[in-house]
Amino acid sequence: MPHRIENMSPIFRHEGEYTFKIFSNEEERMHVHVLYNGQEAKYWLEPRVELAKNSGIAEHRLNEIKKIVEKYADNFSEQFRQHIGKRIDD
Image 1: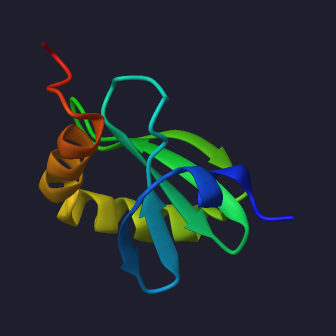
Image 2 (image 1 turned 90 degrees about the vertical axis):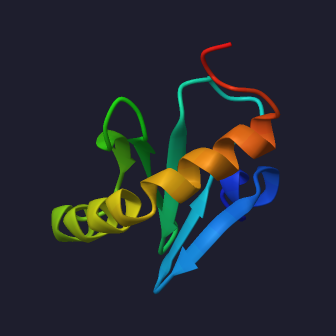
C-alpha cells in the first residue's frame, strides 16, 4: 500500500532518488517532506533548513537530502506559498 503522503500532496521536485512534497492541510510553518525508498523525512524551511522528523532514512542520506533542500530552499518556499495560497506570516 502506498504511503499516504504520496497520494495527498503535490510534488515540488524530483532529485535523483528523492521526491519532495508537502501536505496541503498540514501546519503553516514552511516545510518540505522528502520521500526515499518508502521512507520519509521532513525539513523545516524557516527560519533555517533543519530536520524536523525522520521516519527511517539513513543518516548519510539525510545529510545528502539536507544539502538538496538548502540548495532549493528559496524555490521550495515559493512553491509552498503558492500552494497554500497565502503568506505564512499574514
